[in-house]
Length: 346
Ligand code: 5GP
Image (tube, rainbow, N blue to C red):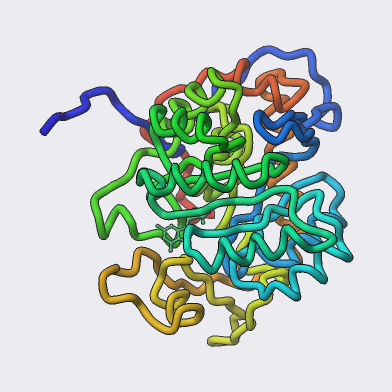
């Protein structure tokens, strides 16, 4: 047994120090990024925020709302749409801002193979497993890369530099980073495994960028300021679950309770999800996600305005004309308190 003594940080442990700047208005800040993906060679241009591939978040309706918003955010679709619905969607909507998600199971791979034969097929996939540390996962990623060289591949999740490097060398364009920080995740509670998300992003971004790869900080953002911190720490993309839950675009039932409207939101390995999609929790695995009620928040557009406005404002505070410059212009300061909660936690 070993103990790593250096301090690892979470979003709540830091603030971003303001810096002198010549920027006069946040309207002049460009929060889009341009990337050329290492393996697929495809170009990307947009606000690099991705709706998580979860029920209630990674939906067709969310993708349509993002397309309408026009800032170029993307959606990772949840894994449970039938192929014919997906084909219809890709046929109509195009696929510029959509990641098609798969797991490592045979059925997902077969569905992808069939989809790739269709007229309009995905150009970006998200290979998503809870634990990206298995040799089997690396082999699977290599197989998909060999089969589809033109596909942009995001894959994860991992939290350490050596595994980021291994995945990039195996053919991944964007490594997804985060184990345990999610709003409806219980991995840390059930397994004791995890890594503070800010440090995970800092260390993994460094490893990825050294090889010409990219990372997506996935999980743990609770307020717009956390998204800014994730980008400031070096994330190329940031994925959001809970912050985008509870909207009209969730494709979930709105329930009333004591005059308040709610939507159910659950982790994709919660017993709710497993019961819904797999007919129950498999015996050998414990559920590692929870089910919560989130207040109904109306159309996602208003939340997007908050998120994007917050991010633009962060850039003006540190004098970053473009999101790309944010991490270079960031000095994090360690803090012991973030918010003044005298009137509540809002
Ligand atoms: P959030 O933005 O809600 O904090 O985090 C979203 C992320 O949580 C997702 O993108 C995914 O990586 C992770 N996640 C979603 N469902 C589950 C689950 O049931 N268990 C665990 N461990 N993580 C989950």
